[in-house]
Image 1: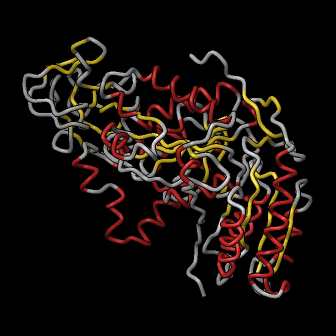
Image 2: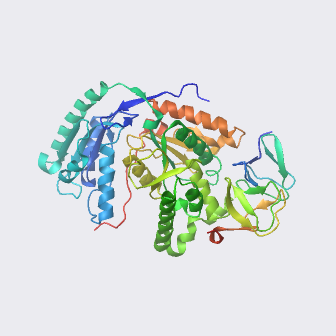
Image 3: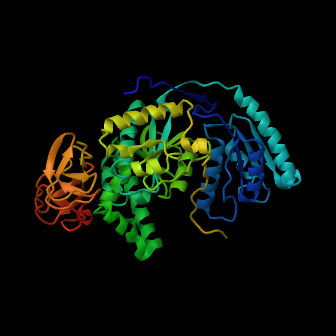
Length: 389
Length: 91
């Protein structure tokens, strides 16, 4: 077991705790990504979050997600100050966005390219604001924090036949440890709950939550059949079968095992912050990049991410711990992997791996950088429902 | 000797082969021989660690992942040839 499980962070005015104190530079719309990238080149300490969204969609569901994703990033507890770059004519323009943010209790600069006289002038002003904010952030000190200040998300992406046997089982053991320490743990990927909904529903804290779980997975299954038609069966593919998975329930169990075994306390919408502690499900997609954005918008300060084929993806301002499901991947992509769960095959007991991972996680919470943070592998994109107009 | 199989949950009646097991090889987990492979069990696939009656549940992750379609002897490879999805039978 870990000797010292004390953790620290930056307490924000809204009561949440950040485990990082980043300056975020974020566009409201894809059209001004170039300005954000220019600021990033001049101020490399800034965390930049360019994305492909912000306009061209009008349905209510997409608008809710758009504003939730952007405001969730700006208000994120790991963000100590933010520079928001707008265009002026976009759907998520700053005049609409800012009132939704309310008082965020941290330094904020807002610049619109159409008001500032173009991209270069906007970038120059943004660089000035960014440098000023960085000086303010440098004065902040870490304070003791509690595990119940944390919302840790678990995710799998680029899975292989070993993911559900090694990495997800080990991460599930850490998830149980986190819940027992008082933290909130969240996982999503509703398409990967198909066939295992009854298991999750049985673990629901009450009938209402059980009903939400069943409704979520039923919706995911109907949507999968509607969109994919005859290809829906590929949710369990011939490759899955070759890997030893016999049924969709078995495949889904291998996925949800990463959430551990504690009671399911609630189901929240994509990007929505949980109101309870313990294990919570997010009604979000299986696509890992979109799923992570939903966790971040909900205020998740840390993510545990298992992979079997190997993905380097991280997330802006949020440390992502990469757990390899097999030793061959760990060795092949050593620069991208934080933890090797493949060593279970070589005889390392689950309890040892769990405790090693928990100790590493505590170090990451307290400021050590993950591989994805070191390498600058941030990806920011989020779920959409309808096509662009 | 390193383990050749992994038992994910204590209630499981199948273990997962950590490497390809040939007929006659032992399914070893934490120093205990759980079964002797009756046939080839590829890495990542399931091997029965006790006899499973016809119509019995296949338990992995501590949960039923399927229903057996035949008597499955200890040491047998467990896959789509001897289990079916119990999914539509559950209410």
